[in-house]
Length: 81
Image (cartoon, rainbow, N blue to C red; front, side):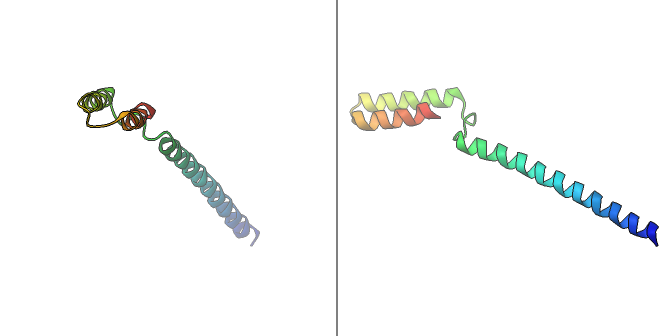
């Protein structure tokens, strides 16, 4: 009788260890996901994409399509990312 009870306790201990490890893995994955969200997706766009967007913004500003405030607002959005 005692041997069966010890085997059951060992099984519960194993399940607890597996559960704790699973929670830790989920916490790490969640932290990585949250960090990427907070950073605003840096690294998703290449520098050539950003350069092309800045060039298009400069052209619109030079052509008078957007004013100073709009230019600065959009430029800061591109610089932040």
